[in-house]
Image (cartoon, rainbow, N blue to C red; front, top):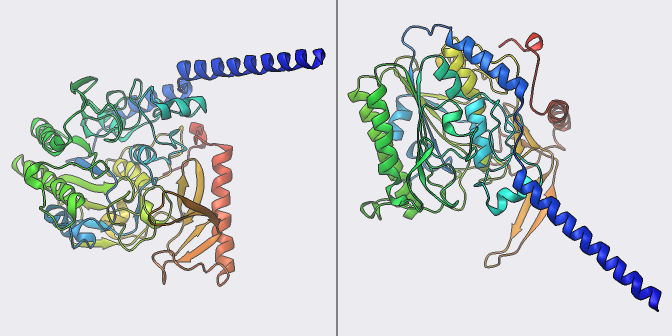
Length: 490
């Protein structure tokens, strides 16, 4: 029996040693992990921006005001069908501008969507397929342990980088959520002026920054966000209206937790959520008034959209699904473009479009070249918006984090395997099922209710093949790097 006791002691010692070693490894990985930026493409980025700085903009370049709401659903605005929430200012911009009815966010979750909007690249290309958490938080530690990026890679080129190099004054107000430390802060990624929060309003500590320094310590009073963000946006416009400017206003609302000032309590028929959205419309009204008072309204391109579908409250409109899934309710978002000097009024377009398209669209309007060392996933919408041409997108690809989950063309949408939650009211438990592949025909079924893969086997095969080609492309070149010689003509 003595040998058995010795064996047990030795085994226990080995297990303890392995546990300690594993703990030390995990602790050191978390403590010392930092994303390694690509020095080759950092250099390419600098060369590209230097080239942009030497180019001359066309006559009368527009000011650009890009307003991105957080978790605003497709059906949460008056012009998209809400009867509970009044948004008269946004509705008027929609009536006087171009509305895109089949517009999709680059992702159904926060950080990847923002990366896609700003870079024109799908989130896995941009190196940020997952939500970013505050440095040192529990979830940040888990991501570091898995070796997952916790910030936008410095070699990525944002729209602000390009516009600043081209001579625009660039400013951001609101939620960044692409990293809370250098070299991935707003001031590192093209924004000359920044005021806002570095991540979502449910993450702690929630402080507001002026450029790199805290201006309003945590916990910032979120009933004041509209007042603070609106005033900052108006000030930026007033101070920089003498030359082209780019303002990126990324509000934290209507992401939860929801707050509104006492004066707004009960103003809508949509409860607290509706009160918050109506307050956002007031903020937009102040921005419009400032553009007009500064004499730059006619030549300002105003874009208003959302980073994904609604979360616990809010309306996805007639669409299936909500935030975080690739059904329409998670991906399809309201989108309007308003530019009196160049875009037709009272125009509704049904062509396919995605948030990745704005980067190449704006560069196309400004006659600026795209970067040559990387693939840009978006396509220019200039012809579609200005002249009513067909969409430049044959397919749109919907990612769930780093996994390609669905593909859409002008008529059909194909889900390879759709995870379906089966909850029971009153219970915290739910069951998950994996179903598919599914094919939905939007000509007869806009809310993805009826699988028609058996009726249209040829279409299902074609769509499945398109998904597989994209998956292989992403597997072979996940960041989409190309040599200058092989860069595609755009």
